[in-house]
Image (cartoon, rainbow, N blue to C red; front, side, top):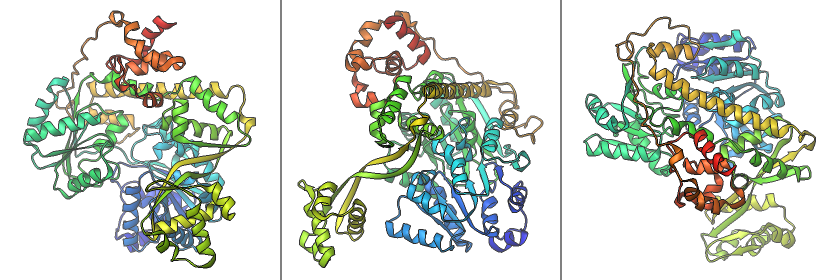
Length: 636
């Protein structure tokens, strides 16, 4: 072990926890490593991969993380590769061949790659020694960043007959750790926690009313001029507003959020990484995959979504070991908003019925376009993905394959020049593609049925050909309407399936709301912040107050209460609801009306363009349950 460590990585000793995890893997066991961010989790699979006889398969959530790992491993002379959606078919084929020839020791993929039946069939032929799950808390429904596709990893492990598993995460509660361990049958002795406490992070929580946040923040930032920092906010519009106000006050800052295009985000991130831009005002879209060691402070301008999110976000500060400051500007103003986001995700029972009925009408195979089904069922995309995974786990569905329903192209060279590249049968084939396309002024759409009757060619060959023409710069290709195809096992469509699903989503909803209240209690507590964090994450290494957080300094946060709201009894329901009830028609339910008044988006609202309808978001400061009860008092 030490010889491999020295030979490939240039280290003479292990960091805390690494040796125990690696020894477990060398001994043939599965293991889990719960280490703080920047503590060397990756070495726990990189070194065993060199020792194990077959492929190490790493499932990672972000392409940026994968790219960093690839570059590092290749610089060390370790054979590593990835398969991802940005590769050309030729690049993917090259990786497939290298894996089949046994030339790759470590393969990185996203979890979504496993939805491809073609890829799963390929993996079944490849001997795999170790499955590594990065950000493994995504496996657990009790985790703060649950991703539905991660739930299936335990099934895939059995399908591919992978003997060992390594789970990696920086943040997990005891409940999540137990859930992760149970799903992969990891012995408690092989679960290693090194502790979440970082002595160089100075945690402070300051109770501040919303109107005073900026005036409180500016002098605090003034003491940290030209230091690198991140300010986290909840909403995209807040990121823009705060960045603008800081700039007007002479503080160099830029907003960063998912509403910007990819080029903008990339440019801002690059400026921040290089040190050209010291300060980012960001939603949680920023941070994953960022490895900048000299971040000196993290500010939460708004409350984070959970204690886990808070721990993850402050974990981006002080990775160079130097003291770093983590400040929360706390009040209860947006408590109802945070809670209401949770209620927007829970599907109505009628929506679940819609999906089950759609599946029930099929004959052994179900084809669906995710965006279309989301709109028709009125279930948000991530929630719909979760529902479909639940149906897979219940044995009703099995993913078969996916395809794009529509291919469009425009010619980049004259038609005769394009055809002149080919001879004989290939000339006739390409000509048939052009002739069977429905042409508009610039773009042409391929008609696969017409192509079949004209040339008797299968869809796969046509797609291979147009991919080639695109790669050669002869056409510009667009593919649309990704269609998922599932096998359906109707015997699983039993009487209590719907109730089971409703109960599961309601339990998830309750868990998320409880997480928000844990967060509030944490920030308002008179107990050491670091000690509370350690206990929350089952870290027994810190047994006494840290001595350097705001509570230990004698300043526990006193959070200003949210301003009192007028009673809903004074609100005129009929006048406020007339327009939206007219627009929704027979789709009207108390849940939909409550979401409308609370300003929560749903697919049906997007389709009907309700943002400009009278009454949208007028009750966004009220609790969802209170608004729903008020509505039911009028319509039931």
